Image (cartoon, rainbow, N blue to C red; front, side):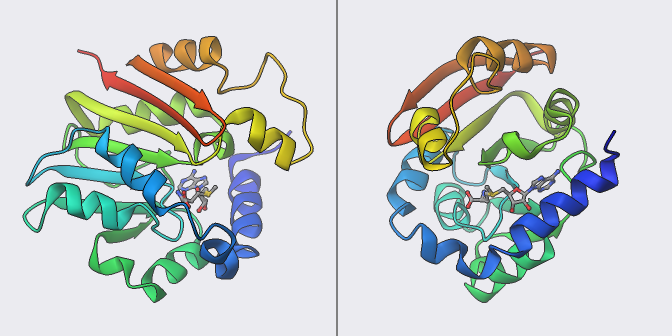
Length: 202
Ligand SMILES: C[S@@+](CC[C@H](N)C(=O)[O-])C[C@H]1O[C@@H](n2cnc3c(N)ncnc32)[C@H](O)[C@@H]1O
């Protein structure tokens, strides 16, 4: 059995090895991130967290959405990814936090929204972790689970076959979100993007 720290070490090793090349591998994703961020419905002065922000690819769009008076946070477990975010100047768009999303150093109900790109498949306990993310979002706040490629295309790229127990299959994800106190409001799984939106229930 793997313990939590094994999972953390695995994630950190995996992404540390990829951090320096991360942005070069996916140079054309910017517009897809901006379009997904637009669906959060953020307003000037809003407060948003990018959970598993990596090199901070979403941070410029999040900052543009909330403006200079807003709060943008980027949280990640892998120091090397955050170093690349800072090297790319994205620490000017948001405050970078080295932290596990399983235990966020944030006040309850303090955010309007959470954006999480490519995160959920790496969480050891997705239900519990989505509940912790819910804790920091106000009632009526929004969660976006995004990937700039659809499930089938990603599986093909990774040489996997999609199976019905896939975490992000619509019925599985809906049940997972419901169990964690979220209500899924839209689900799109297309070749060029995956985007599930959910609202924090009362
Ligand atoms: C596939 S990458 C996506 C990075 C970025 N969101 C993007 O779209 O380019 C997943 C990121 O999630 C981070 N991560 C995985 N598990 C995490 C956890 N429990 N807490 C915080 N970050 C985590 C990894 O370190 C990695 O940077």
